[in-house]
Amino acid sequence: MSWVQSAVNSPLPSGAVVGGQDSDGTVIYVGRAYHSGDLLPAKIIPQKQAAYVSYNGYEVFVQNYEVLCGDNYMWVSSGYGQVPEGSVPGGRSSDGEVLFIGRASFEGSLTPGKIHPSHQCLYVPYDGQERNFQNYEVLVQKPEEDCCSCCCCSWITTNVRNRLPKNPVVAGKDSDGSAIYVGRAWHNEELFPAKVISARNACYITVDGKEVFVENFDILTGTGFSWVTAQNGEVPDGSVQGGKLKDGTILYVGRVTHEGSLTPGKIVPPHHCMYIAFNGDEKRFMKYETLVKQGCDCANCGCVCQCPYTLAKFKDKINGRPSRFISLIPILPFMLGNQGKSGFKVDIQNNKITAYFFFKFITLAHMKSSRLLVHTVYCHFKSTWVRAGIRGKIPRNAIYGGHDLEGNTIYIGRVKVGESILPCSIIPFKRIAYTTYKGLTIFEEEYDVLCGDTYHWIPARDGEAPEGSLIGGKTAKGENIFVGRVAYKSAVLVGMIVPSEGCLLVSIEGKEECFKEYDVAVLKYREGCVCCTIS
Image (tube, rainbow, N blue to C red; front, side, top):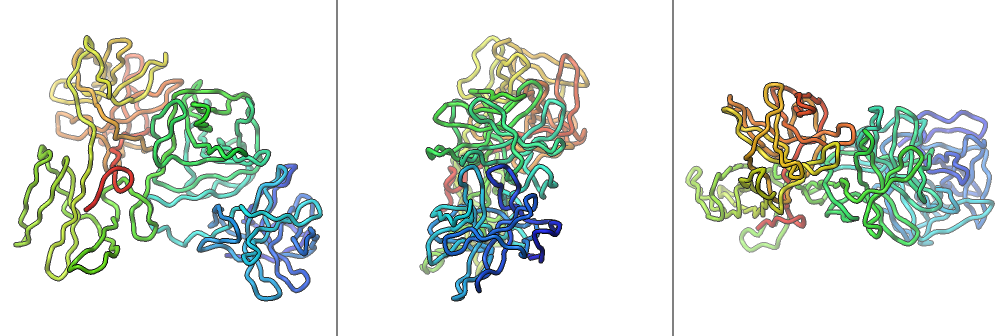
């Protein structure tokens, strides 16, 4: 944390923390200043050569102040004088009470001020007066190191003139190929999901049928996100909240392909659809992808993880002692083949391990006092490969993979070509199934179609496939091939990820095309409250 001395007629220090924006869109930065024996959080507006604090019912102009600088902060919702751990102290009253930095939206502004815990509210200076709010956001300093690289995320306040923060979440790309990032922005006291295009110094939201440019916004940062197919205003568990309307409606982050772009926008559940901002207008879609947060079931952050190879939290009921949580790394990753619902037993150095499974998975074990203590993971897998053909009907629970240029649904399949088993695209409306092989498009009449509901899509590149990626086949040499997809013009096309090729191979207009960046289908492990149980 760094406070830099400055004044209204001095240039703004580098790395100043953005606190919000004034009603006219002018950027407000976070500061603090002395007044009448108090050290008070301040709002700094360099473009107006002004800084203000809130004191005794009034907005008070101050000439000299300190500016908060750095990039390791985030805003967390709170209220009634409460502040979470890590909240940034912005001052101290004359009687010794610590004051924290908060902000609230008011009359088209997003204004920082002082959280006064004993008063159970936030005060902000606005239009000559001191305004109080019981609900607000608190400025929190993030830890030096994330507790787990797979789950940490935050909203970082910035504006179109600043550089992107570390690890911004990519939502897609514009029609010209420019990357689009996930953001959110305030407009008329409502918070909306936003599309951020840093290459153009631009950020847009969609409001009342129009695309609206905004200068100040929050950008989502972190890892552990994926995109899950949904429709009709539905959002799966773990969907990322990107905003909130005055009536309390929660808005979620979604994305769709449109005119060669892959554009994020707002999912409005009561409207049974999602909207995007595009070429000045608001576009409406019934089918879309939802941004979903994967958790990390580690002892430090307490969220739920969908990856079995991360740290796990278990109840220790050894020798009848009260339950407590212990952290341990999964070991003994047994792949059970066709064990199905049957149990199995394994002896390791005279220690007996017994585990029971619904389907193939792993056990997690912990050594203590020369005894091997076993915890069983029950994983309810709901996907399988079903034999089918172009003359028959597609199974009802076939997994959606994307859509072609005409908007026809593509399902995920696999076929045997020579000595290889290859992922394929199935388009029931056209009665075709095809894959790419040695640079050409190969059509097949019979195939296996993937059925179930336990896959989501995670961005990857250069032939990489994360743990849990869907294996859609094997080359003649035994190399695993994974299932991926890519946005192409107005389509989302399914293809094969061949690690040794370093890319995703897709059949387009009879030819094999290579894409370095793509999404990969990953098994959605349903642990904890997601859907699997640990005993």
